[in-house]
Length: 368
Image (cartoon, rainbow, N blue to C red; front, top):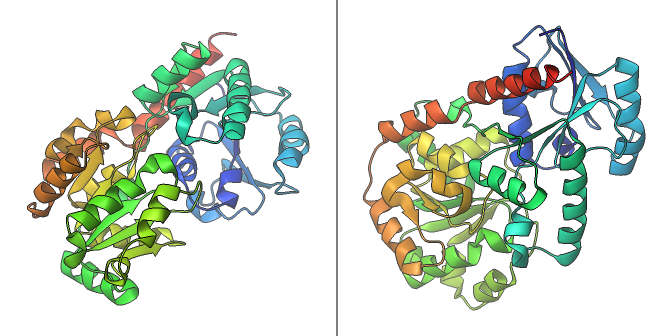
């Protein structure tokens, strides 16, 4: 394969960390090891240099504005034409005019599979923009078999390539549970806690977890900790929370704006990781918790049905009794499950994703 120039839109790094930032960071940290190609990373803040480091085949570019319209209509075309880019990689939406071959990663189309959980305006705009992007991109990527099938079903494009998400190697590292738990307690005042990491949307099912936590009286011995930005308000959760006593409310904690190292510490210090989401295009937190050695309980729907190795930790996200059954099981688990950890390390790593990515590029090159 000849030397190629890749432009990577990293505008997601200008906002709070999310799944797309993890995806770009993990995939391209692996890809830049290939010195045959040059990689141009662009954002408004350039706050990701520590993520990729300094390399001869890496160049950092700065957008003139944080406005997405300026970025898509002015900055990106200027960079692509000036640098003679071969492939430009975007998350979800590509620019309206084609200046080189575009790669688009569509992480999920849950707003089409589960429309009741999304605002009307969001659904209408995203369907149009996703359709536009999927039709015009040279290469379409996604992160799971579930998401691929949904994209094929809704947008009638069969050549969708799966570049699976991966678990950061730090989650597999050894650590002293007692030391970490004491540090977390000192920093945040929480102990023996159940942990749910996810941004707030109704489909994430925070209210379902809260109700089981309260009605099964887990608050008497445990904290319930939520980590994630507020995206779409969950009115059911808010209404239920207001009915709780002060004793119960004191055991329910929101932690936000944690950096990566702080997040890893909170995961390691947890008694259980619980992921009750109704619908996901992938779902990385259950895997991170399992890799860390924390008993991981996870909904068994959509893309999460792939996590068969969690076994008794899987539950029906509409069945309170089944979640409680999983919690009872999880609280009995002690020590790291090396079998599960090994499965995750082998199945979900960025080397695999990078190999699949380069294979897709090579196949596209052959089409000339």
